[in-house]
Length: 176
Image 1 (tube, rainbow, N blue to C red):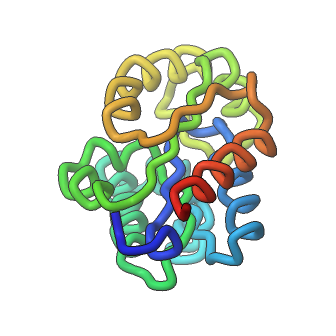
Image 2: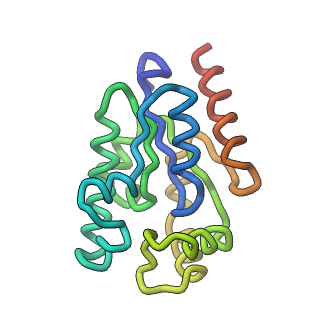
């Protein structure tokens, strides 16, 4: 960890639809820190959604761009709050770069994630039904999330506001 809590990037991870953007925005506002959201980054930088990148450039390119977002955000100062794409945990460079950050896992069951995938067309489906995709992604990534996470919260059991409050309480304890 960095010398002070304020110097530590906070990275919110989880499957798409778990609430990463909302929790990150709440934290950014409370801590007066910049927020870096993967979906927003992709749309601003490339002019298209994550789903469109996956369809036109391929999944490998989408994941490379998502990794770029995380790595760029982790290098920024002041330290931002980063809502990271789940795919970043597949990249060894990203996993290594996460070590000094505070990593927060928003853990949501596939049924919850499937509903969120259905609600937003910017979320890539990779040619699968939302529930099938959510189950596959959860099975593939849950162990990686657990491995890198400093904090772990169940969604929607805890609301986005409750999660943000718990993270802020954790930071207060760390600051001492």
